[in-house]
Length: 203
Image (cartoon, rainbow, N blue to C red):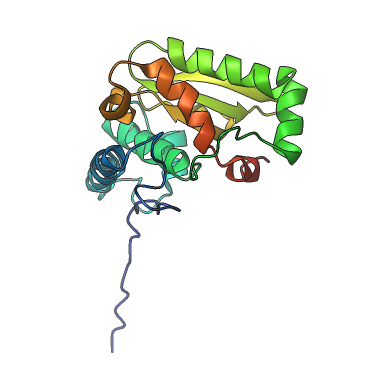
């Protein structure tokens, strides 16, 4: 009698939105969420699953793929899948005067002088990134917070850092709501950051 083993390879799944698709208005519209999350991210996830089938990356986590895949289609789609998971899950309904408190505020103040100075430096990085990409806040190997500009699908994991806050500055993230006014979009995003989620990513 032969025993048949069923090999189940887990596919990469879409991250779940922790809010309704219109919950971020007016900062990010429901229309933008429908396109950005429902179409752009879904396409990255679908493409990644197709690309990794029958490769050494099948069954690996997105994080592991981002860390180890060579530059090319697999990395690009894995990077964008992971980046958008961080991005969409770090938001909440808008709150005017939304500020970090507790540990995350302490660490930001420690490494940037003040929360306000951090915001200025982060906004500057996001506004001046040429072309498409991401501005990231991450922890280096010593636990210090650093701001980096990552082009295209770049993620701090690639250089050994721990990403905790990412801002998408590809045009599809803001063009329906802000057209070419990237700076206005960056300024508005502070109202929807869920600082508790950001803090939970600290190591």
